[in-house]
Image (cartoon, rainbow, N blue to C red; front, side, top):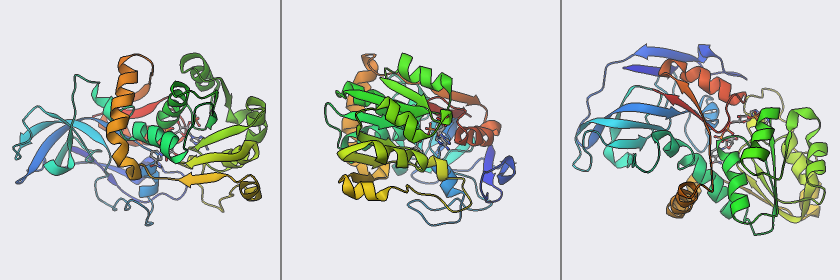
Length: 330
Ligand code: NDP
């Protein structure tokens, strides 16, 4: 089957040259293992970090080895009594047509509940990130004014909707195009949104949130984070989820220059990795699942067809070609 390997490590922006498309033998599953034919896989911003040879909360991809990531596929061989041929499973063996996976490390998904791709987005890792990041990391409270960056992406589009559903008094989003801004306000019910490319973020945010913000959900870092500190009310809560504006930077990273306001305003700044909130998985799945079923929450996916196009989909994701979750059908 086709697989995509790490050919070289990028410096700055990754390119097609960093990826190798190879034909590999279909693996044979051993005891307690499954062979899965992937149907859909995820490309995520965190994968950029794994392309670097630096230790982080998740080990780097290995040179010459097939990449990894979330995927949903169909069991074609099962050497585990808990799984049958035809079962749909969520697992980490993405970036390939056929994956050999330990049965213990996969989760069965119910195709009657939602389309396969939803388990990589709204009902999957990005969904939990949005839900737990807002409710637990940012300690959201009814009546909060919430600002979220990367607002038209997989995580951000859910953060804004969940905040509205939970009684935010005002939800403001930022995104990188006029179409995305319109999507936020017209389709997702954000109270205000701006295109961060239209001017200094601090000015755009101050205009959108004249009375300041209680919560900032940060997907972007850099200038956005600095702007949110300026607009923060006394005691505001920040959930630091991602810093995508910095993932491809090579020079010195410029952090917020107004850290003194963090202390002066008594801000609560909380970074998190979604795995920390695994205990909220059930509550998340039940509540978001209900909102989806009731039509109170919507989501979009940007779906790229074909495993050979996965590297390009990933590169495009980093540049904002997606609205909602970026997925690749295998
Ligand atoms: P998205 O669907 O939001 O896709 C990434 C988006 O980032 C692009 O669509 C683009 O939108 C935006 N972007 C790219 N460059 C910049 C820039 N320089 N400034 C502002 N925006 C930019 O991805 P996810 O929803 O999967 O992830 C969102 C964030 O959450 C990422 O930072 C990711 O690393 C983080 N994350 C963290 C987790 C955790 O456990 N802490 C778990 C999951 C995700 P635009 O057109 O608006 O620029």
